[in-house]
Image 1: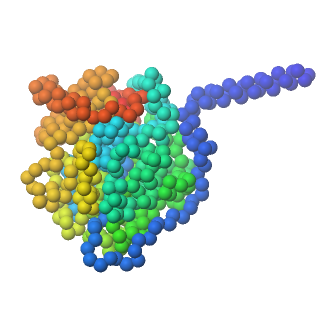
Image 2: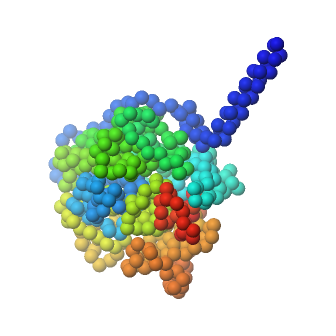
Image 3: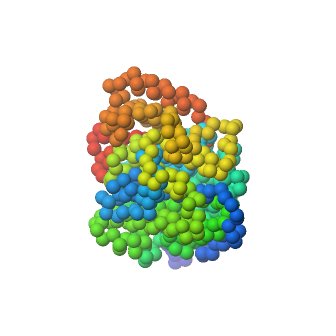
Length: 554
C-alpha cells in the first residue's frame, strides 16, 4: 500500500510538472516580469518633494526656461491641430493645439528615428543615434524572440537572429547610450539651469546611464520602454487588449505600474500615470518658478498597453469602437495634462519667459490595430515612411515667436539640443559632429533665406532613408532588396514610387545615402529581430497578396 501511494504521489508530481512545463512553454515570455517583481517589488506610493528654488524672483532679466513635452507613439493625425484628429476629429485636443496656434507649427517636423529609444537618444544628444551606435531599441531577449517567432493571422512571421543572441546582454538595462555622449540636461545644467526629468527614459538602466548620471538634478521616471498606467484590475480603468499583437502580449505580461524618484527604489504612483506625471510637473514648475529650469516631460501616452481612466472613457460615448475609444480616452488625459502644465506657467508668472516644445518620439503604431492615426501619411512607427517619422512638432514662446507661424522646411528632433543650448547661452560641443541646428533664427525671421538642413538621415540595420531636398529615398537590403523613391513636393504622401522610372536619381541618392551611412558608428549590439510590417494597413486588418512591407530590425 505504501509503495502504491508513493507511485501515486510521484505520478501527481509528474503530471503537475508536465502541466507546469506546458504552461511555461505557452507563457515563457512572462519571465522578465516575474524575475523583475521578485528582485525589486513595487513599493507603496511615497510623496515626492521637489527642491525649492529661491522664494522670490531675482531682479532684472534671467535666462528663459525650457519645457520640452514629449508624447509617445502619437500619430500625426491624433491631435486636432490641423483639422483632423483621432476618431475623425470627434475628440479634440485643445491644449496641444494651443501650443501650435500660439507659436510655430513645423509642418515638416521629423522624428530622430521611427522607434522610441533611438529617437530619444537623438533628442538628448542633438546627433543621429547611429553616430554613436545606439541604433536599436533596448528590449529583453524574450521580447525579441516572441515578436520574431510569432505567426500572424496573415501567415507572415519574423526572423530571429539566434547566432548573435549571445552577443546581446540578457539584461536590457545594459543596453545604453555611451557615457561619452553629452546630453541636453548636462548642457543646460552647466549653463546654470535646474534640470528636471519626468516619465519614460529608455536610454539605459545602469547607474552611469540613468538620467541622474546624465545631467538631471531631479527625476521622476521609469527606465524601461513602457509602463502600466494603473494597476491591473483597477475598477476605475478601462482596458483594451490586442490578442493579434505579440508586443501587446509581452507588455501586459511584464510591465509594472511604478516610477523612481531620483534613482531610488521604484514605487506606485498615486493616480493614473498621465495625471500623476502632469500633476508632479506642475508642482516642480512652482518650486522652480524663481530660477531658470529645463524640464523634460516624457509622457508614456499614448503607447500601449491601452489603459484609460473610466471617467475619460465614459466622456466619449460618440466613439463606438471600443479600442479606439480607449485610445482616444488616453489622448484626452494627455491633452488635459498638457493644459495643466501650460496653466501652471501662467499662474506662476513665467509663461512669457518659457520656450515650450511639443512633439512625439515617432509616429503611431501599426500594432495597435487602428487606421488613420497617421493620416494623410503612409506607414507607421518602425517604418521610415512619413507615417513613422513625420510627427507633430510645435514651439511656443510668447513675445519671441509670432502666434500662428508655420515653417515648412524640414526640421528634426536633433534640432532641439542646439535650440535649447542657444537659449541657455551654452556653447555646442566642438569635439563631435552635431547634426541639429538652432531653429529660432528660422522661425523668428532672422534667417529667412537658408534652410536648417540639406539632408536628413535615418537607419535601422539593413533599412535606411535619406531626405535630400524634395527627394526621399528608402533602401531595404534584408531580407530582400527594395528601393522606394519619392518626390515629396509633388507626392507628400508617398503614393508613386519613382525608383524604376527615375533610375538615375535613385542611383545618385542611394550613393549619397550609403556614403552617409558609412560615416555612422557600428551598432553597439546586433539586431536579433527582423519583423514584417505592412505599410498600408494596421495589424488588425487582414493582409493582402503582394502588399508592400518593410522589415523592422531590432
